Length: 95
Image 1: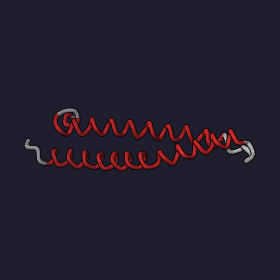
Image 2: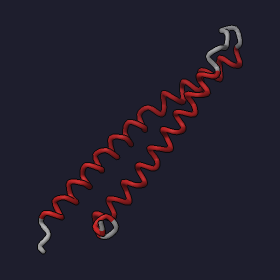
Image 3: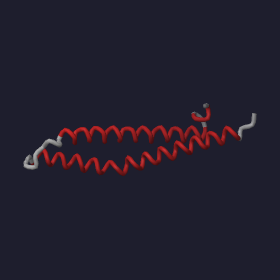
Image 4: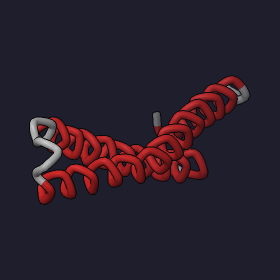
């Protein structure tokens, strides 16, 4: 376990932790926006201020899609890379 806190594997683990934290923050923000969207679904089409707010929320949700997917893919790839390198390092270690 010491390998995850020292050297280049430790650096990769730190980058993974930061990316995962950002990804979780974006997922939480999207969930919060989606809950606001559900709250506003009862608005009639003639209620313009509420409809404008609803349109803004949907636009924000659309803008979050690409960063969430990108961070998710980076986090997953980095997870597999770290585990693979950790196993490789462990198998090549001389006792």
